[in-house]
Image 1: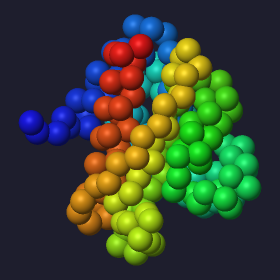
Image 2: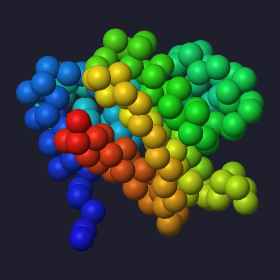
Image 3: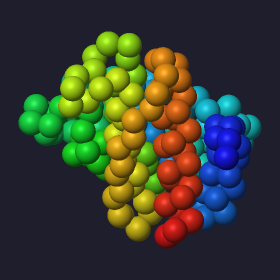
Image 4: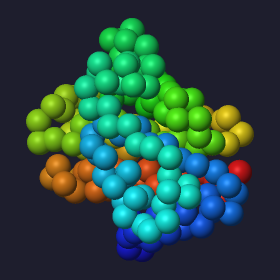
Length: 164
């Protein structure tokens, strides 16, 4: 089955959020704002897209999202605890019902045996306050990893909203 286009995912998400009256915040590291850009590409996105945080550095994760620096020191920026903390911080600081976060190794360098290039952690904070996370490993060059991560973040949010 082909991957859904990012734009199609955004249209589905926009319909869902408008209907429910919810707003979304994004917290992006390795995707560098691709998700926020995809969301705001759609006319009328101000109805449901609140803001995007591009927290590429560890300091930005701490300063803008309130991620505890010791959490990053213990687990690394590319980790489940940090992805979850990023999603919570984005939702709380933006006062949004929903938030998603992405932190990963897009490459071509920066990988390790434990976290090879293409490793991406996701966090999703839902309107009921529940928190979900997942790790994926994407193949391809830097652009392919970043694009796949953006698509997966949006698709993952839609799936979790449908399940809820």
